[in-house]
Length: 248
Image (cartoon, rainbow, N blue to C red; front, side, top):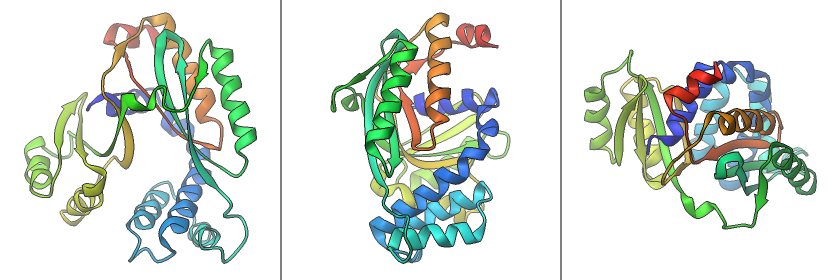
């Protein structure tokens, strides 16, 4: 299950996440709107909203923007007409892509995603063509420099974690989506601060790509993630240490 976390580690190591903090406000607000639309505006009764608010606070989204996003989601004020949709495609090297989108204009964003894929040497795929290659899982990551794997395992396994693995200094806890909030809360109650925490898509199997394909994939993902409507990009690519060194 380490494929998703490995990609996140690569992004973090290369400074990509920090460089995109300006985009995080928009994405965080959309997550709150969607969570409020799905389960109501009270975070005490809506675990999805509670998590979205926690993540928004982690990127320093101001309280007034959090409150406005909740009101948009519940329909108290305009601006909550946002829908979620996944697009599927292929990147260079035959890498499968699952692209999560939150948008108020599906026609616009599908054209933009198709253009980005085509420009990179990839292509859009029909619905269902690649989604079967991914499993929906909860993932919570911790820095090994802060917490031991034994300490993480002691809590995680007791509350229903499926898997706990360490790679590149990051401990990744994987859960079934239905158990995710309980596991997340157990770590929070223990005072353990997660680096990342979300329900995401994890590739069942990874395919190794060469340096040329890796360069194109990184450029494509950068382009996609610069789009405010694109929430997350998932792939089944495996980047060897040799390939990563060539990207430096």
